[in-house]
Length: 76
Image 1 (cartoon, rainbow, N blue to C red):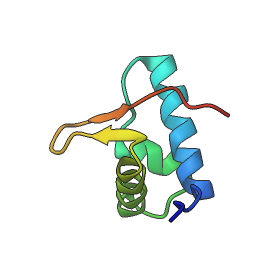
Image 2: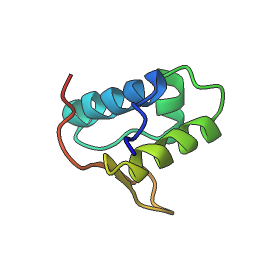
Image 3: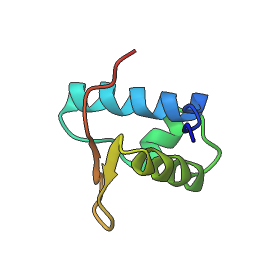
Image 4: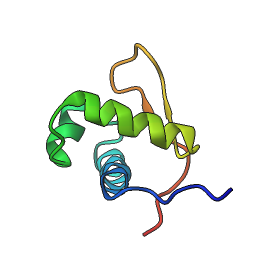
């Protein structure tokens, strides 16, 4: 069974993470991600980060502020 493609919001989050980490050398906060992708709440961001982690694109370290790690370079 083929996996579903990334949603537009998941792509925006992934590209935002890459750009932010490349620029600042540390990951953004959940609130910064929410603002950048026009998410209605942080729970929307958590949901999408969980989906990205399930696909193996990122690691999310629980109970760590800014605990998001990309597993590789995002390719456009």
